[in-house]
Image (cartoon, rainbow, N blue to C red; front, side):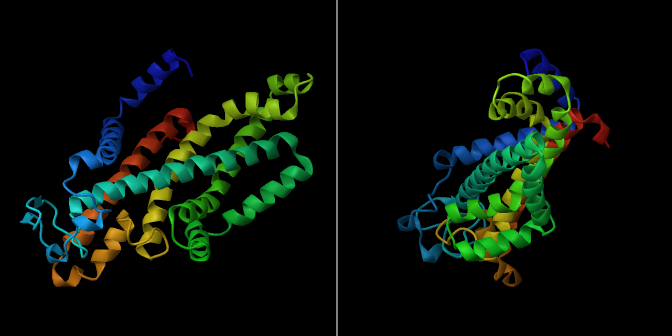
Length: 291
C-alpha cells in the first residue's frame, strides 16, 4: 500500500468520529503503558516498595511512602494506578505477541493449504475445522492448566487457541487468489512453490488477516484476563488486569469496590476501543460487510 493509498484510507477512516476517538484511546493507553515507569509513583513488581499497612486503602489515601494513592491500593498494598498501568503493559504485550505468532502460524498454514491443495489441504483444514468446533476459551483453559503459569506458557495457550481463525481466513483469501491469472502464470515459471506463496499469495491475503488480527488481539487480551482471574494465567507476582480484578473480587461485598472496579474499567475500555478500530478497518477493507 503506497502513500496515496494510505492517505485515502486515513481520509475514509477519519470520517468516523467514533473510530478516530477509539484509535486515540488505544494510542493513549499504549503510550501510558510504555511510559508507566516514568509516570507512576510506584513499581508494583518491587516488593520492597510495598507495605501491608497500606493494603486496601481507599482512593486518595496518602500512604507510608508519602505519596497519594489516587485510585487506592489493592490487597498487597500496591498503588492501584501504578498496578493498572503495568497491568495494561502485560495485557498489550500478551495480546500483541500472541496475535503476531498466531497470525504467522495460522496465515502460513492457510495459504499453504490453499496453494498446494490435495492431501495437504485436507490434513491442515480438517485439523483447523476440528479446533474451530471447540470454544477458544475452553481450549485456552485446558492448555493453561496443563502448561502452568508463566508468560511463555500463557502465550503458547493463546496461540494454540487462536491460530485456527487466521488459518481459516487465510485459506479463504488465498483460495480466491490462487485461481487468478497472475498466480497461474507464476506457477508456470521455474519459481518454487514457497516463493510463490510468500511473494504473491501472502501479500494479497493480508487485508482480511489484518482485520482478524485486530479482533484477535482484543480476544487475546480478554482471554489473558480471564485466565489470570481464574489463577491459570500469570503468577500473582505480576499484576495483570485479570489478577488485579481477582485480588479485589472477595472484597467487593465489604465496600472496597475500587480494587476490582478500576482495573475492570481499564480492561473494558481497552477491549472496546480495539474492537471499534477493528470494525472500521474491516468495513473499509471489505465494504460488503459494512453495517
